[in-house]
Length: 258
Image (cartoon, rainbow, N blue to C red; front, side, top):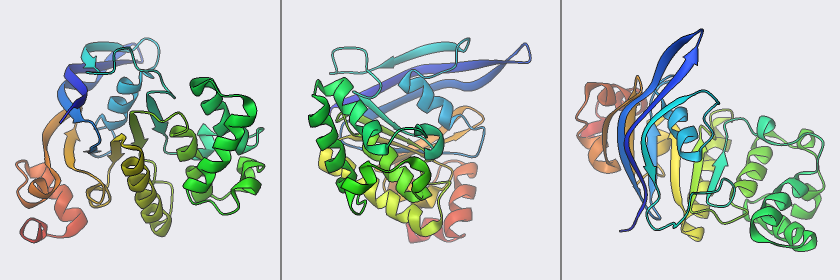
């Protein structure tokens, strides 16, 4: 299996109130092409920092150590083109004064060298692919006219518009109700399979992540505690913290049930 992403001894330190705060410490991690890696941990564990580091979106002034390599890509990854990013809050990632179809089309036009007509046609097709009813009408709508679940579907359409190699979903379902969460997870899984993308799925919910992930990486206090194949990790977690996450989601007998 081809390695899509290779992270070596990654460290990230933020500056807060004049002091350095370590967000990630000595992280070694690989992702395979066409596979889903779920990154699990509580708030402040470093999961979102990992996603931002991979996407090159760390804030100015952040200290960065270690390496992030892209075997086989042949060039530095471009956000939007090689990396698609779905953020937690779709309201914050969509422009409130532009129709959503134009926002999806702009990604395609920028990275795929399409005409505006071609890009808008692709955007409408993508809105259909993410299972939005009447995609032509949705393309003309503004974000405030859509529900939270609909806006997240639009954000996913924008994230995959340029056919990226890696899709990062950073707590992309946490602001949604349980039923919509399940729908979005199923949608992401289908799109990743259809487009042969790799997926980095970040969540605090190990049960939700297990529906998608080939492997699960568990983070705490900026460190990678353990990583393993999903079924094996759920059955036989090596770390007590992982065991507590599993029990909180599945119950005490989760390991036996597998």
